[in-house]
Image 1 (spheres, rainbow, N blue to C red):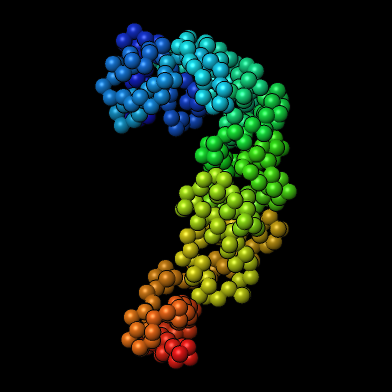
Image 2: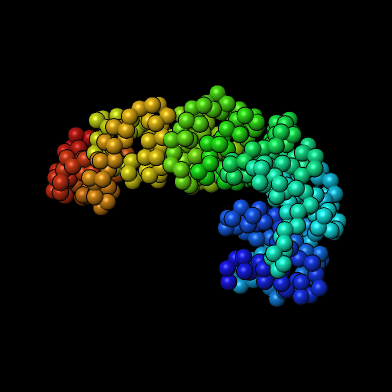
Length: 405
């Protein structure tokens, strides 16, 4: 069962049971734009207890807010009871909710383009807030008072920018001014939520437009403590983002662009965004090595192989090309590195070492830091093509061991 069919089956079941049920939110926007929706939400006048009784398999992920996950085929569909929210003292969650009507439910949502409903059984749009008009005009507009909408959930500051950038829309004037006035409220949003929104923005092909909105709105100053330093590099960051391919990129690469050239900034950013170890390693590796390929003639074969075996070499190549383009340089440097990389067989990038610690021990060399020193030198020579077999590696190791005794 396709995802849309699964959502429609949930609507059908609710309607057969005598409840009102509609598709809601972003999926309606995507349907009107002729895009494939990535998720489908259902809104209904059925209460959570009634939803649980009606469907065989459910999950109560947000029951306090009237939200139940319903299993349909291989999919989980979010089903929410029409509601009104009563104040937001923490800038994220409503202090209380009141089950209500579709008209009132639409008023609690963030932007007009996300506040429409659709009846898939009658093929009918239900729009209480002018969402279709704004969609056709290419506008991101807060529903009702924009100051109130952003105060209710500060993450909407970033969501407005993400929608505008991704859809190629303009942020409506009053919404934009409210966003700018409340920019500092972003500091109250959890690092995890900022992390997720930035990832959605900066890994997408529209990342440069998202960055422009972030900078012009001054939200960039409040992404994390210390992010205000990005303002001085805004144009340079934009130029590099523009040089990246018009396709999804890794979040590590996007964050590395923001941090360049400072390793301290990279570490601070990863700490602030609660980056996973994998993400942190990717970002810091890219920042540490971002200049290593700038002069192809000075990059040894061994050094190139070591970079190729690093955790983010493909991203390093993308970063090299983008940095060169941002600097107005020709493609010669990138083309030369690409040619050399293509000439190296995958099995030769990080081959098994000719010499190991067991060999050094067999020489009678006492264990210690000298082991690592010798093994590194011999392996470097192996990767560089200076030695071609185990016998040559052992001879080099014996010579180094003798010199180090």
